[in-house]
Image 1: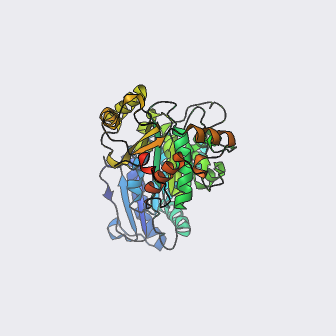
Image 2 (image 1 turned 60 degrees about the vertical axis):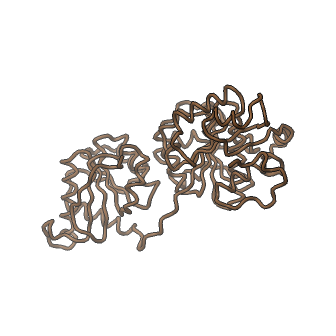
Length: 415
């Protein structure tokens, strides 16, 4: 489904490319007319709309269906995006914040209200101008002039969208946090790229404990103040691991309120603008499947064990939610022991309906040792760390680890 309904062009091409988003047609048309008329105002003599050059105005009659569709609009590389507030102020402010997080466009808002609180919230969300209806051409011209000063003289090349790796458990206790946190450490080291690990194991997650870290801020801070979330604010919430990995930990205390899907989408959008790789410990939170955490660009690692309950849950999740993911879904058998419960590879594959791509061995001694020393498995050499390192290298598009030991293929990648 397209992000927006069919749009209309209101003027010719030139210096500015403006997206005008407004469900209220009369107000949207009034703003479009003011934008057209202000071209004559800036030159000192009025010209009819048909003779206008210098601005392309593209009108959108609805807000995006959800915040995940915004990148489709931003691909048009608009210089300015103007959003109506009155039709749905709360959602409109989320749109404003997400646009500011995902691209270089200057965001403005317009309203028929002169509400001081609404003005302040708009500025916090990232709006540069608050336009109050009715608009005069001179007011719009001044706003565009200020925007032109802030506009880069040349467009920066588009940043490659960050890769998203989501680790999800078939049920609690499958070892999702151990696999996700060590995968993230390995990815940061093997790729030498900016990598962020987000712990969504609510209400209390264990990523920080697994990495031997103490953190001051958490996902709760990001969710509670999502209206002001941008790259700088996100950076202030992160902790740095010795491996170079950035970590946004789960809260140390039970959160006072539940986070919204919109807040999570905003966090992911901002993160993908600031990092090359995003790794998410999603625990067993299949309830988040309606968010951008599980959109088509996400690489899903489904963690399960060879147990009756785990395989049953994994089968349900694959068939109901991930049947069409293709290579974007990778099944990981954690704490794997050949012929556990008397099940061979054929039986496990038949139960899951798909073959497992990775097997992480049941190496209790290594796991116990790293827990005592608060040292990630990825920072030492063990059967577990070799498989996870290979997972990270494959995810980064790197060649197979040349230092893998004999017999590694027994527990490594399959097929």
